Image 1 (cartoon, rainbow, N blue to C red):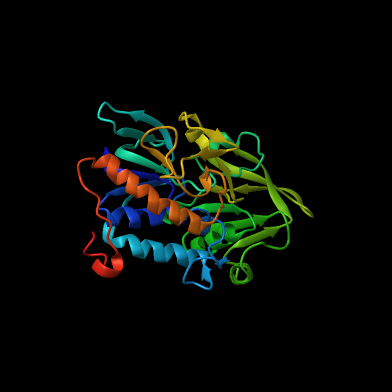
Image 2 (image 1 turned 135 degrees about the vertical axis):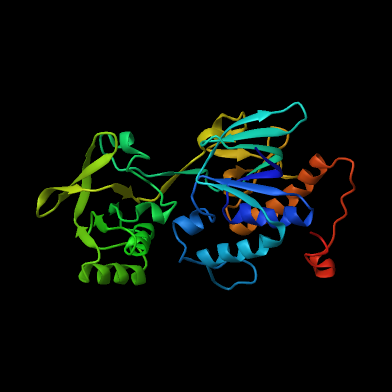
Length: 335
C-alpha cells in the first residue's frame, strides 16, 4: 500500500504543478495516470506543439514544458503510478481515502485532487472484431516498455506523432517492424516523417500506406493481422504484436461513479478552494467547471495553488499555515 498526503489523479501539467505548490507546504504527493508517461495530452498527443500563454515563455514546446515541470518538482520527490487508472474509492474511519487502481494498487491518502484534464484518456481502438480477445496478449495501445518488443515482429498502425516516433524508437529493437497508415500522407512532425521514410528506404522497416488492419487471428495470443491495402487487397502478416496508435479519447471513466456533481462531463467545484461536493475531494484544471471557467493551463496552475492551502488545513487541522514567498526563503527554506 502506498501512503501519501495528497493523491493527484492525472500527471499532466496541472497535476505536476500541484506537486510544487503542495511541496512548499510540506505535503507529500503521489500521482496516478492511465498513460505510461507523465505529461497528459502534452506528451502523448502534441509534444512538439508550441504553447504561447505560459507566463515568462513567449513560446515553449509542450514537451519542454513538461520537462521543466518535472525539473521543478524534483526537490519534493513525488511518487508515481503510471499506466494505471483510479477505479474505486473508499473513505476510511479516519477520514482518509483508499483508492484502488485498475491493476490493484492501493493508495492511502488524506485528500484527492482530480487533475485529469479532459478526463481519463482511453485509446481509440480500431473497429476490428475480436480485438479485445488479444488485448495484453499481443495487442497493445501504449508502449510502456520498449524492451518488450526486442526480437519480435511488430505491426504499428497510425499516422500521427506517436506512431511515427515509436516506429523510429523501436526500429533497432524489434526484429521486424511494419508501419501501416490508411493514407499516403502523415499528420506527424515533418522531421519524424523524414526519418520514417529513410528507415523504409534503408529496408529497416516495412512501410505500407493506403492500408488498414481488418482482422486479427491467433489461439491464446495474437499470431496474425490481416490488412487491406488499396492496390494489393488483403494481405496476411504474421506478427507477435499489433500496436494501433490512433490517439486518445477523453472520458470521465470510473470517476463518474464517485457521487461527484457532474455537469456536462465536468466536475462542479467551489471556487473558494476547488472542492467538490464530496469532502476531501478536489478537482482542478480542465476537468472542473464553475461560472466563468476558462480551460487554460495557467488557470489550472492558479486553481492548484489555492486548492493545496485547503488540503493542508484538512490534513493538519491543528497546525497554523504560514504563507511564505519563495523569493524570500527559496525552495530549500520551504521544503
